[in-house]
Every structure is written in C-alpha cells, then in structure tokens.
Length: 241
Image 1 (cartoon, rainbow, N blue to C red):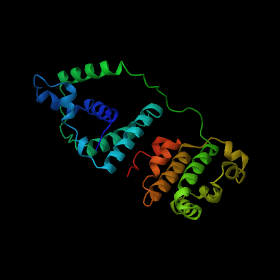
Image 2 (cartoon, helix red, strand yellow; image 1 turned 120 degrees about the horizontal axis):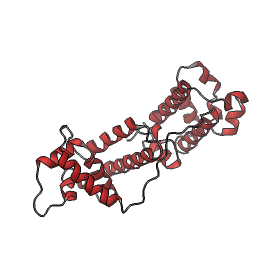
Image 3 (cartoon, rainbow, N blue to C red; image 1 turned 60 degrees about the horizontal axis):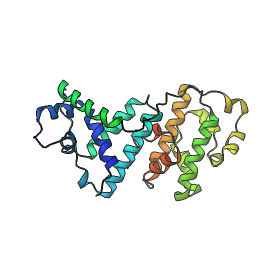
Image 4 (cartoon, helix red, strand yellow; image 1 turned 90 degrees about the vertical axis):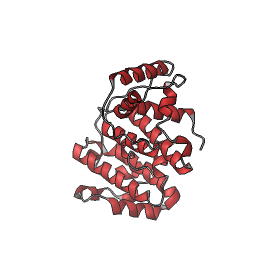
C-alpha cells in the first residue's frame, strides 16, 4: 500500500520516543551510509499493510493528534493508542533498557525536524463546568450520524439497550436525542444548566461509549465518522475497527 510521508514520519516520531527502540538503536550501530531515518524505518512494516490496516493506522494517528492537542491530560488514552499503532506496524517493544546516547541522538534529530513545522497549539483540560446541555449536543451528534446508516428505530433501541443502570438516566428520553432543544425541553430547566458531578459525567460518557461500541458491530466506520464530526476524542480512543 502507498503510505503517505506524513504517516511514516508520525510513526517514526512515536518510535523514537520509546525507550525500547532507543535501546535497540544503541545496540545496533549504523552503517556508514545509513541515516537515522533509515534505521527507524527498519522497525516498521508499513509497506505490507492491507487497505483496512492502513485505514486503521490513519485513524489512530488522527485520533492521537487530536487528543494530544485538545485533551493532553488523557495520557493513558495516548499510551493505549500508541500501543495499538506499534502492534499494527509489527514492532515488538519488549526491551526496556534506555541508552543515553541514543536518547540524545534521537532528540537532536527530531528537534531539528520539528523546528521547520508549525508548532501545535496546546490546549489545557477544560475548566468550564459540564452540563446536560452539552451532553444533549453529543447525543444529537451520535444519533444523527448513526441514523443515516441504521435508521431511527434501531438507533433508539441501541440507546435503550446500552443505557447504564443509574435510575436518574430514565428521565433522559432517547426519542428526544434527535434535537437538542427537544431534549432540553423535556427536562427541568434547573437540571439542564446545573453543573454535572464527576460521577454523572462518567456515567454519561459510559453510555455514549457503550452505544458507539454496540453500533460498531454493524457500522465499523462509526468512530471515524464521529471523530470527523467533532466528537470528543476520549470517547473514541479504543473503538477502532
């Protein structure tokens, strides 16, 4: 498959930051005519990816970029995505030792490369309180996109099927998820504007995540569609098909 230079470079950057790869590069000295990029390229197997694997790799990299830029506090999600990328390109990262010389060499190489790129904006974790109004927008987004392919009745049933057991969720009528205003009108005004607790946010995230996972069984491209539509990245990180 034809792999873009951008994907190759991003994979090399992730590899260069991993201690196991740094150790391997130190243990295997380069030949006279071999560049550092060539050495890193030896550890990835991009040219033999299938079409579906390449699509998955592109999605993972896109997701990694979005989380790193917009939600950098989700460090565990980033590590999980990196692990998926390494497995996909056939890299065995069982080694754990780190070589100071390799670290310095790699850091110097990539800092020089990154000076020619536009610096990515760093966005800190959101500080504004989250309300049901915001989650109404998430429900509408997931519902509208999924319904294009599966239909309204199936989407409503999936929301009911995946709803967590917490009793307060019963007041959220899934037949109103199609329209944010309709969704909010069926709830007490005070509740829609009151900041959600951490436990309530976690429960709503669990519901949305469960819906997407269930829908992926018949619509495996759903995470990609939602990511492109602006769905929060942390709800999609482990849903790649």
